[in-house]
Image 1: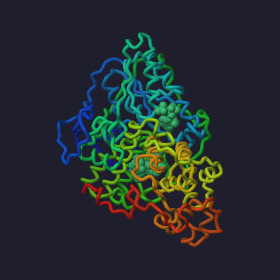
Image 2 (image 1 turned 180 degrees about the vertical axis):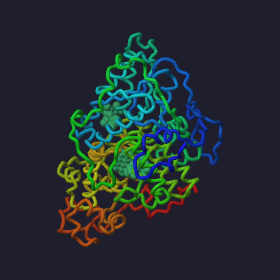
Image 3 (image 1 turned 30 degrees about the horizontal axis):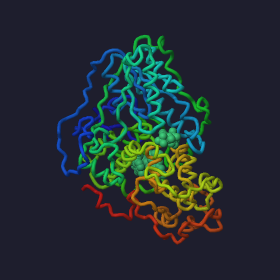
Image 4 (image 1 turned 60 degrees about the vertical axis):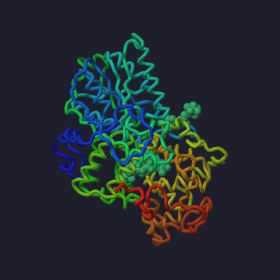
Length: 559
Ligand SMILES: Cc1cc2nc3c(=O)[nH]c(=O)nc-3n(C[C@H](O)[C@H](O)[C@H](O)COP(=O)(O)OP(=O)(O)OC[C@H]3O[C@@H](n4cnc5c(N)ncnc54)[C@H](O)[C@@H]3O)c2cc1C
Ligand SMILES: Nc1ncnc2c1ncn2[C@@H]1O[C@H](COP(=O)(O)OP(=O)(O)OP(=O)(O)O)[C@@H](O)[C@H]1O
């Protein structure tokens, strides 16, 4: 079987390569059995005891028909819901439901719930999934409506015994799961009809069942979580998927009608808009593009070995992996990335950088598990820590200036323009604009979080609200007063003003050193900075958790 590194460089994977790419897996095995955390306490141990292999069987012994309901798992590789549906049936129907609520408005401030660029990315991902399923002898049924109505109606038409899907954690998504369950229970025969919704866990690096603590006991500090999982758990290998997964049920069109068109932007009530060519790269939705990016970043460009030094950049495709949009929609699984990191470490080099990609993916896991622990508090103004007594302004003049990139601070304005034009912003930029909005403008952090929810290609409720509550001092951060000084951040991360001039062309005419403090040559700052332009202040943050270049990493490195 060809390995990823044997694939064609600098372009998307050809269809001929895809099935082989999807089947790669490593020989790592998981220590825990499902549900094991329930019986365990959080005990940090320095060794991992292997209690047996947990290789997923890929034989098909099922009966009847099953449905796989695709949600934020728009991939074939490492897809346990798909694999289980295939194993438990003789015929399988893949289904994607375009839920109109996702194209409504955000909860508190009424922004578009899904902006045009993310909607486009999602539909590209669905189209790519359909192509890949067709190559495996299946197809994708696409319907518009509420999953609570559509899933049971498809089940009824084809007489399926089980619906397999991935479990989500936030209340909007879990409410849909509950609705689907209820809809299935209402089918002829009621709950006794025996049609089941089988929700499987599958979007994280560490499996929920393998955690050394229950979600309720999850540590409130990231480092404790990370050490707990690193010392006690093994990451499961990406699942092997069968090369062919057909057949579809006989006479499927007679039962359910045509497979259904993938909506265009007008169908979703949106206008087509392309990502700005000024963006870090063009993000194309779908697993094919995701695997091509993984291959390109790790193997062609060999960037993984320097990731930790470059990851705080803001310009260009390769300062960081750019995996997040694909991860958010499940086009790429973190375990696939992990397997590839391990292969890279054995074939090329293992260093702090190769580890650091996993370190960041553990942050992603952490916020997902935190969302289980804290439920809707994650979205409330007081956050997981239920902070009360802080005054939060909703001043629309300040907010509009922030959102449109007109604050008079080039670093803020450039980042906000990049977000609106491309649906992407660097991690460095996100931290800075969040701090400025909350600490300097004193605005309600939820306005920022909801605007990010609209715009980001990689929007994911857990990572977004987790990071916003963290940045606003109401989340999982031992420090409440994390402040990013704009002068310091500009001097460290954009000393020549290249980034700001890229997004604010009028600054190009200024000498490089002046671009981040242009004085009268740019807009008047909308507010003074909390700690002035000196760049210091009471508690500036040059020592963020995100491991910038000023920080010694020895303490967290496992090596
Ligand atoms: C205010 C704010 C809001 C954010 N909202 C989101 C969001 O909605 N969706 C999202 O995926 N990320 C979010 N992030 C996290 C982070 O900024 C992005 O994941 C990262 O910039 C994506 O670029 P990359 O894939 O090149 O990351 P890399 O630096 O290459 O990191 C690799 C992967 O690690 C994960 N990761 C890295 N940093 C974080 C982090 N701080 N929290 C969680 N996971 C992380 C991502 O999955 C990322 O793809 C947010 C950060 C902040 C400060
Ligand atoms: N996937 C998601 N994306 C964005 N926001 C979400 C998501 N899931 C849940 N939420 C948010 O969760 C919150 C749920 O609010 P709701 O009023 O239904 O419950 P609540 O009364 O606030 O919570 P509780 O009943 O726990 O007190 C809303 O703020 C909603 O926007």
